[in-house]
Image 1 (cartoon, rainbow, N blue to C red):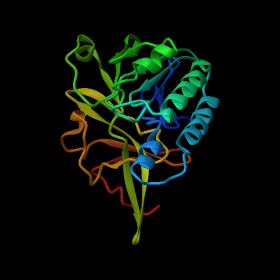
Image 2 (cartoon, helix red, strand yellow):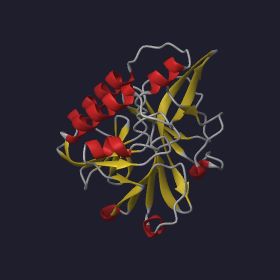
Image 3 (spheres, helix red, strand yellow):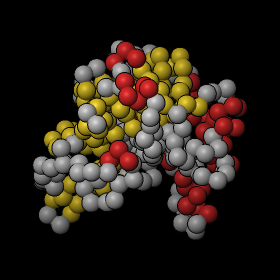
Image 4 (cartoon, rainbow, N blue to C red):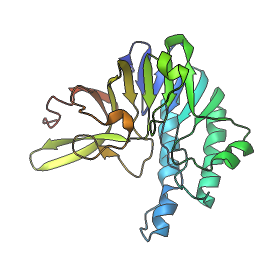
Length: 245
């Protein structure tokens, strides 16, 4: 059973499933990440795309036929150009996901500065956000705030961008895990998605500086779902997350 993070919204793998809308929201694939590292002299195997596709296949197996799949920003990694790896992998993942739903939606992230040619190739529209009227959910990347009418109307905000993770410790050993966060922002529900990127786990929200303007305050009351083989509820960040497991 997929854990319910908000009524009608469940955790599915590293994504969120909106039940009424039959919509899956995922974020931060950062395709082409290894090529960027290779250019910097950091040689790692190019496994991100293959592992992401495995994760997505497993997520989709547990879901009914989808109306929409929403990629909530940072589909690609490079800021200034489109690498060969990005071009090849973005087109392949877009084609793969398009076959799994009636409509694929691309939300523009801060790394998606020149995503236009790739989206145009596949005849896809790039949006700044997606507002879902049935349960007043606004999906946006999370690297900047919004003054739109839909932002003001929304009861729930879904963002990516931050790549949240938490560290669990047992004795001297600690390990970092991807996680979902749920809290409040200006009286609205705020859900933060983990990154789908499989090269990096993410940002330790307990100890590292956070980037999103939605998270520039104490997160002690935010609830956390750690993701390993499935999602595990670990209470609020203000409680002891460094418990033995």
